[in-house]
Length: 430
Ligand code: SF4
Image 1 (cartoon, rainbow, N blue to C red):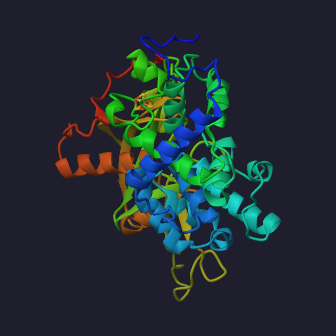
Image 2: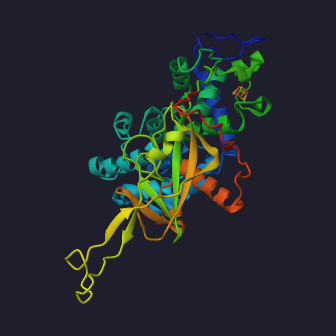
Image 3: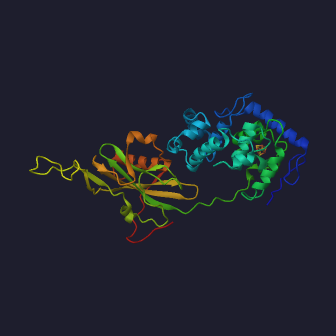
């Protein structure tokens, strides 16, 4: 589907009519002039006259995927301070990379980041390749990131197309094909614009233009350097581009999270499997997250805790320890008093929303962690690779503890009232 631009369109660019060389040069000249005056000062960007560092370009581009600039900056700065080079990142443990990434979300990016650093050191001697195909062959680098590194770090004549650039180009050419089907048309249109001179600045200029002027809502057309050629602006409905399919939200999954608090201030935790959702991250134990979760039966999946007993001394044997070998410590099952706290913790993953019911148990300081789990001191939680979902679970448990009431104050948009208890045997799914 192609929406036609309304009104006089003598100078507007049309998707079915390639712009002349003169028009392309005009666009590049004006976009670059605008960029020289309005470029965003970002910590990963080279200043005018400096060369861009491919490591910094790559690191920032991976972090910026699905993440705002404001959220990215502190993570980028911490990463760069800890791993100033790709060699330093490759030499680090994946666990440390995940810990530094915790809170930024989309954790497959962190695993790929580490794998990519290792591949660059192993395959390319620590130097980022310039060739697009070689870049794309690296873990976690797709078409967009390869083009961004090639254009910004190596001045390759290519236009990387992120969401901002996609919007600017779709509007400039009034490309009305619904996304994602319309992506090839946008890519072809963007390719026509790539200038021979300053392709790195041109790419960053389009990104900045999309982020600050050609915004998703209420684009500031009067101060846009592309206004004279922009077909969507001339048509009077720039916000109609790009045309997107209505988002389909995945089916709700539900589960339970178990917050076990030891009297010495430790929390029970475990590491998720290395691959898959939140792979390699730290979590409090949870049930599976399913469509037909049954809250009444959740406690069947609660962690089986143990209690340590010191070796006993045999009566009448001069205090010799029982069990031989110097007296082994014994353990016995510990029956935890689980409390289901009000509300649920909500989180939205890319493909589905999740609701977790939270159970708390207080256990004595000599409680042992079940196999595959460990105790973490509260003060040490910040240093763990704890994803946002788990931070919400712990914060919810803390809020209830601090309130000291059965129904904690709801807030933050994350907590909802406790759903009515299901009838025994009834599975709920939404
Ligand atoms: S003129 Fe308006 S719609 Fe067109 S690119 Fe500029 S800001 Fe976007």
